[in-house]
Image (cartoon, helix red, strand yellow):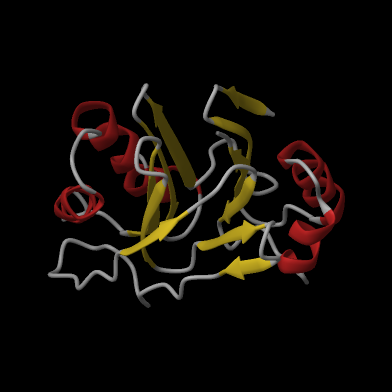
Length: 199
C-alpha cells in the first residue's frame, strides 16, 4: 500500500500484476503541489510488458506537463499512444483553491465521488474505447467538492459488486481500501486508489 498524506488530501493506492506476470499492464501516477492534486490510472491493452509500454505514457507525460489542463494532458497521452497497443485512461485534477475536481476518461476505468453530506454518489460515464493515437473526443466534467468527500478510482481488474454501498459504509479512505482488498481477487492487473478530500 502506498499512502499520500497532505493537508488537503489523504489517499491509499493498490497496484498488483496479473497472477503469473512480473509486470502490471496498469500504471498510475499522482502529482501533488500546494495548489492541486492530479491522479491518473491507465490500463494498457492486454497484459505484461506490452500493456505496460502503453500505460507508462501517463507518468512520462505527467512528470513534465502536470501544470496543463486535463484536456491538454489527455491529448498528450493520446499522441504518445501511436504505434503502441493503446490504453484506457482516466485522469482527475483537484483544485484546492477553488474546491473543484475535473475528470476525464476514455475506456473502462471507473470513478466514484461520494458526497457524504448529501449522501450522493457521482459516477461519470466514460467515453467508450481507448486511447490509440487516433483523434479522440473527450467528455471532461467539472464537479465541486466539500470537506471529507470520498473518491474511488479503479481499473477493470478490480471487480466490485457494489462499490456505492462500500463507499457509504466506509468512513475514511483507509477503511474503504481495506474493504476492497478483502473483497477482490486479482485474476487480472488491478489498480485502485481511495482518497478523501480535506479542508
